[in-house]
Length: 272
Ligand SMILES: [Mn+2]
Image (cartoon, rainbow, N blue to C red; front, side, top):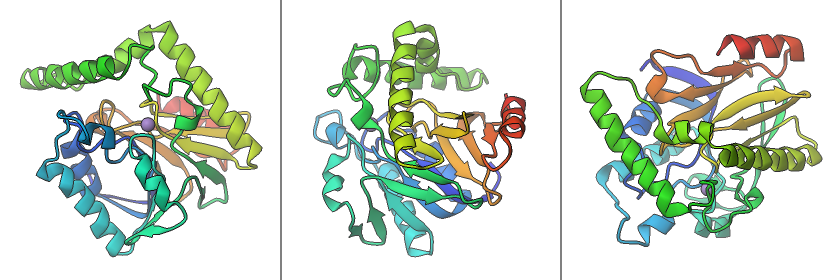
């Protein structure tokens, strides 16, 4: 992984305390990335998991929090927008936890002046219990699939095969999952448009996406349980969805909202 320096990094759905959290990859990403502002868009610590017997809090999980704090203490602005797995921290909204400011929703202004609404996204999720869209199979089924995926990829790595996402493949094949994602995205976009911004950046559904339609940017920074994605804002204001396990072989999506829609569309399709 190369060292990179960017204007802003948006990550969410790390689910620390969940054994499926890909902490090693995240630690490597954070160690090799410098940013002026780090946005943590919810579900950073999985308090649900921590309260059950399956919760696991290892040194690696702690290292992530220490790394974030070290960045905050060394000049990186860190903004935390809690999610539905760490809702306790919503009590701190509009205040600070040490060097980290906490917000229910936030606004990020890009290098080229676009304003993005930042939120976790669970308030646009009809399925309150699951907190995920796993076609109503529920949290248990989702956890099982992600756990199988982790072991599967360990075996694949032994044989030199690249990372492959079982949950991702299931999502693509499931009509219900696609309908769920579409309905979530529509609701988020409608709300954000009503706030007079040029785009929205959220998390929650573990589905990294970056696109511009009708001049409005929809970005989802994905997660660190299955896809290991981060959204970056480069110094020139362009956005990139970085997928870490694939970083060496596959460019992420990238678009420049300040360009004309036609130029932005070309940049977007080239990245595929
Ligand atoms: Mn969530």
